[in-house]
Image (cartoon, rainbow, N blue to C red; front, side, top):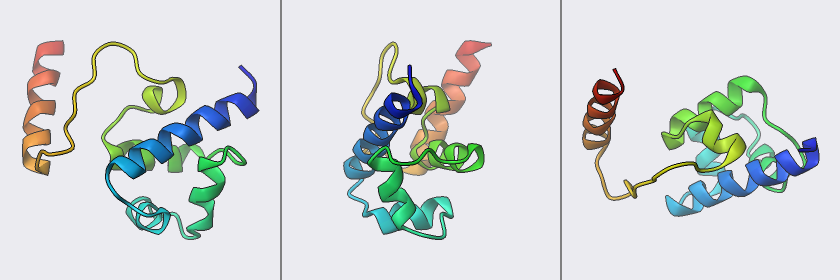
Length: 100
């Protein structure tokens, strides 16, 4: 996969996740610590790739893996958009326990 294709796919996933939450690009910039909100636009348009640190923050904010951001979904996905943070943390604890 070329860098341009990777950037485009990554940008689409970031945009989709942001829109699912009803966030503006400025909201996402604040959540991730990106100083210049226009960088979010560059990421979403596939014009730039985020740094590793920014990619990790984006994954953390959206509660997805960097693999998902970079390669897309594999396996099952569930909609957790209506859950509180504490409920999501509880699910992650259960899932982590099952993986061991």
